[in-house]
Length: 176
Image (cartoon, rainbow, N blue to C red; front, side, top):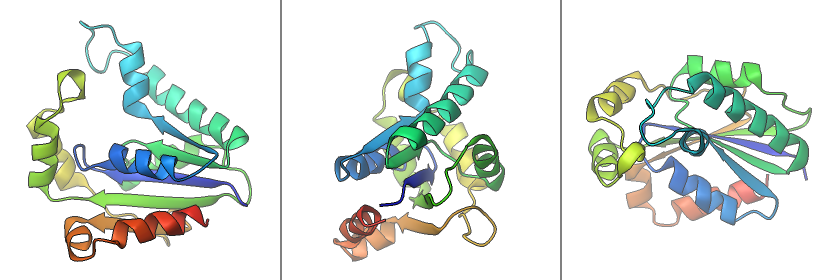
């Protein structure tokens, strides 16, 4: 089976990390690399959120590259909401030849992101104005203009209209 890199995308509070965990649990040789987890491991309680930003980003890329060498399935869990952020990601990755690159864009309504974010505590909470700004900046990825072999866009309407939609997407990802 070919290696697979899954790039999670979407506004904070939309459910990317929860979905990444579901995907991880459905695969035997899988690792999730989370930029937030890396950040929270580095920060002390009184540190500014962005104190170690360069180190966080570099560690994120390094862990993904290491994962691509060791595991069959790697999930890059961060917002990646703009074309520029995705270009930066791809420019720093050493993706082995033959690796499938799959984008999963979690496109929830702003209200959903804000409501789910409000349940977060401590450093996991993202200020509302930041989420609103992210929501305005988001750009659904394109297979033709970016380095994806496949892109899945998951929105609230799809998930509500078809209870089995998410299961089918996960099954499809299992077979890559």
